[in-house]
Structure formats: structure tokens, C-alpha cells
Image (cartoon, rainbow, N blue to C red; front, side, top):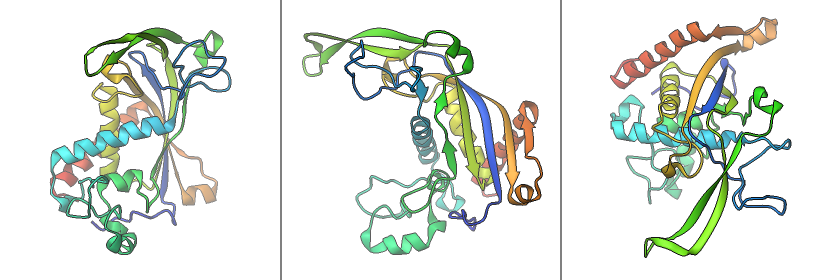
Length: 272
């Protein structure tokens, strides 16, 4: 692997993806607890105008954990570069070279960032910043012309030992209604084709329902649909020359995404 990981010192390309995230089932991302003015026990996270939004960190966390599981399950040879470290391992070993563990080897790992796993290359580690930035997904303008698309549902507290309702305790919680649209923006700096294929595969898992977003997913909540409308690409030379960004609309973007998938397949099979 001779690709630069910590290559933020020189801008090669920046990509900006624009799309829409639509809830297929109800979605719950909690605000952390009820306030004095909340009418339910577990409200959803809202912006200053009272409309729900999806934090970029929630999307990025779901995406990263999905890709980590896929990469580990594929069990590619480490020489291919498509492998994932285990940040929960007790000590450094063959499954980790990103500087999470062995104190005696941290300085060496910090210098040798080329040994980062595929997931840390894309999403960053405690040593290297992330190449991917996902903004908060704000609710689409069409929903702001009416009341927030929020429903209230009931729940009961279960005694996990007795497997019965605990003390007849009932609570209610808010969810974002199915069919709610959010504006989605993803920024990528200095991308490599093969790991762009890995990133797109992660988004596919979200779109296809294999990965859910938010809480209460075991109850069927959190399934979303993702549709990309365009991509914009800028380069350092273009920015300095005053050239407009390259705009890639949906049909051409689909072809570019297909080329990234091919690059990932070639990389996984030992190609360039």
C-alpha cells in the first residue's frame, strides 16, 4: 500500500455529494431526555425551529460500523489493504496497526500512518483526520410549510429477568413519520477510487435496509432510503484559476459510481 493517508497538506480533489434521505419506516433519534416543556417522555432531536434533523455523526457512525463489519466479514488478505482493525482489542497484533493499543508502539504507528486499515483511512483514527464529512441532514423545505412530521408512540418497561411488564410502567416516545425527506450532503477530500467504492457500498447497505439509523431499530424503526442527485468536484488548480466546479448529474454520477465499484473489486482481487 503506497497511498498517502494523512495527505491533507495538499488538496487534490474535493467531492460534494447532494442527495435526499427519506424515511421508509419511523425514525427515532433522541434528544437525550425530556425537558420541562416536552409533552412526552422521550422526545426526538429538533432544530431551533422545532423540526427534526439527523446529526451527521449518527449517519457517519452507522456508516462506519457497517463498513467495518463488511470488511471484517470478507476476510481479505491484509496485503490487499481491505481490512479493518479492532479498536477493542486488548493489545496490538496482526489485526491492528492504527496506533490504538500498545503504548510502546504508538510513536512508531503515528509515523507509519500508511499502515492504517481501510476503515481508518476513510473515516480517520485518533491519529489521522477523516476524509469524509457528513453534514447534519436538515428536513426538506417542503415539510417546513406545515407542522413537524412527528408521531407519538407508546412503550412499556420490560423486566428482562422475568420477561414481563415491570410494575405496569408505561412511557411514550416521539418518532419522525415515514416518508419524511431530509437534505443530505457528503464531502470527501482527496478520494481514492477503491475506497470510494467501499463508501458507496456502505451507503447501499443503508438504502437496502440492512443497516438502520437511530434508536429502537429492533422494533423496526430507522430504515431509510438514499438517492443521490448530483456530485460537484473541485481541484486546487481549478479553485485558483477561478474555474467552475465539475458538476456530475445523476446519470453520469451512476456511471462514476459503477467505476468505483469496479475499482474496489479490482483492488480486492489484487489489482491496482
